[in-house]
Structures are given as structure tokens and as C-alpha cells.
Amino acid sequence: MNKRKRQYLTKLAEKIQQGSITDEETIFFDKWYNGLSKKELNIDSQYAKNKNQLKRRIFRRIQNDIKSTEKVPAFFHWKKLAIAASLVLGTILGSLYFYLHDDHSINDPQPIIVAGKNNAILTLADGSKINLSEAANGLISHTANVDIIKTSSGSIQYKSQTSSSNKPTAYNTIEAPAGGKWSLTLPDGTQVWLNSSSSITYPTQFSATERKVKIKGEAFFDVAHNKKAPFIVSSGQQLIRVLGTEFNVEAYEEDAVAKTTLLKGAVAIESGNKTVKLVPGEQAKWNGKEIVKEVVDTEAAIAWKEGYFKFNENIESILTKISRWYNVEIIYLSKPDPATTFSGKIARDRNLNSVLKMLEYDGNIHFQIQGRRVIVKK
Image 1: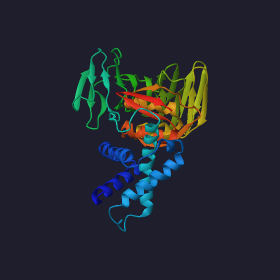
Image 2: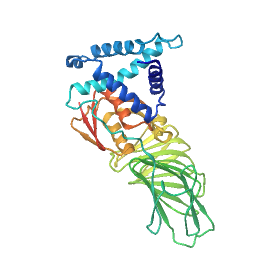
Image 3: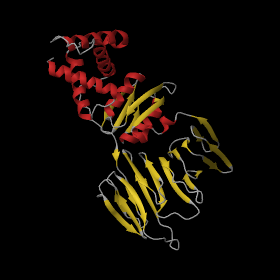
């Protein structure tokens, strides 16, 4: 290995540790270690049954390869070498273990599935649709004395020209599909962030006494304060009533439990004749029959909005979130143990391949990508 390539690979290993590696760099890194694992490591299948032996052997091989051609410069500390080798090792180990127990070769071309992006459809009151990711910045619609504007940051804002309280209420819907997300500012100044496979329906002008919207999926709200007009979020059979606050709602129709997590202010969760009030740091879980609240890690609840995953759950739950963000179908040949959990942070801008490799190494489970399907097996 020449000096320039060794230094570049070391830089990429450090980027993996920092979570700042790009998709292009990941492709280069994957190609290098995949080639190394098949052509140079010469692993016998019996070692795949003993991960500790396999780990030591790969680690020694990486150490020797990195330092083989030239003397390691003084600034390259052995601690960094160990970190770089360990990072390479984690991915090689998962890939080799899969390779030795399956007909699938780790060197077979795997499609690179990139992360989701800003993408949504706006449906106007008359039923016409606008692809927001393709629409130019500036005024995109003017109806019922309301201007709808796409900002340079990729958000949508509503600006009312005159009061139209005597006109029938017009409703718009924004839907972020699987693999998409979007943000908007409602007519009252409330800011909303939509996660993938989510939608929000809202009036183009709120009444003076109530501000009510309906969501499906997951959304984060930063509600503009107005004590004269409570802000109400409808999701399924529950209502969330607030005056001004920050909270996250996760209410996908296919999920058994709807979760409301409060960051600031106060909210009341209503379902039938039951009402539960939250204080910051609490989460309400509604299963269709009862509402239970508990103190939770609020960072994990809004990690998606900040651009990363923060997991502390079982693999099946994680793969459900991954399927929405990367717009893939999950096919189980073997169901993972629900008691086995994975904890950690992963940037949401990483490609799917690198995310699955992290889960593969940590969770004793293996994945194969076929088109836009992820095959799960032990």
C-alpha cells in the first residue's frame, strides 16, 4: 500500500468514527476492505464460528498492511492505528461472517441506496398538486387571498393578504413520502417538521378561536403562542391541545402505539373521556385504550429532526424507521430476537449500506439488498 492511499484510508477511518464520511468516500472505503477481505485475508470457514479468533486474525492483518510499505510517521500514533483498524474490522467482520454462511458474495455488486431528502407533495383545496421539491423558490400559489411561498431553505410559508373570515375554510395537505421530509410555517407562525411517510392537513387561515390540524405519521411542532386560540393536533383518535410549546408526535397508522413527547411548555392528550397532561421531558403513549406517560430521553424522540437516528430499541423497530427513511421494503427470512436491542447514534445522511453494516456487526444479524428490498436473515 502506498503512502498516499494509506493516509487517505486512515482519514476515512477517522471520518467513520466522527460520523462525517460522505457517500462517495464510503463507496471507496467499502471497495477497499471488500477487496482486502477476499483477496488477502484467506479466511477459513471454521473461523467464522469463532468470532474472537477471526477478530484477532483480521486485526493483525490490518495492522501489518497499514504499516507494511513504509515507516509510520511520528504524528501517526498507534492509538489512532488501533481505532482505524477496529473500525475497518467491524465492517469486515460482519461482511465476512455473512459471506462464509451464505451463497451471497460480499464482492457481488450491492446497489448503493442513499438517504432520504427534502421531498413532498402539496395538495391545494381545489385538489391540484404541486411537487414541492421541484417547485422554484418564491410564490407557488395564490388562492383565497393567501400567498404560498417556497423559501430558499426549502420550507413553505403562508402569508394572508386580507382577512377572509366570511369565506369557507380552505384546507391544504402536505405529504412527505417514504424517503422524504419537509418543513413548513403555518398561517399563525407555527413551525412544523414532517418526517418520512407523514402528512399534515391544515386550513390556509385559522379561526380566531381555534387552530386545528390533522397529522398522519410523525411531526415536530414549535407552536406560536396564542392564548385566545388553542392549537389542536388530531392524530387517529387522540387530540393534543396546547397554547404554545414544542413537542413531537409519532402516530403512524401501522404502529400499535402513538407517542407524544414534550420538550417545552405544556400539552394535554385527550382520547374519549381521558385526559393526560405532560410536563417537559415526559412522553404519553396511547395504545387505543389507555394513555400512559413516562419520563423519556427527549433527544432520541427528535433525533430525526436534527439529522440523525438515536436508537435504544430492538432491531425490528429500528428497521421500521429505516424502511421509511430509505424507502425500502423489509423482508424477514428470520425474525430477530425482540429482546436483542441496539443502542447508538447514526447520521441520517449516510447511505443505507453503511447503516446496515453497523447493525449487522452489533446485532448478530445479516442483510442483503435486492433492489429496494432488504432481506433480513441470521
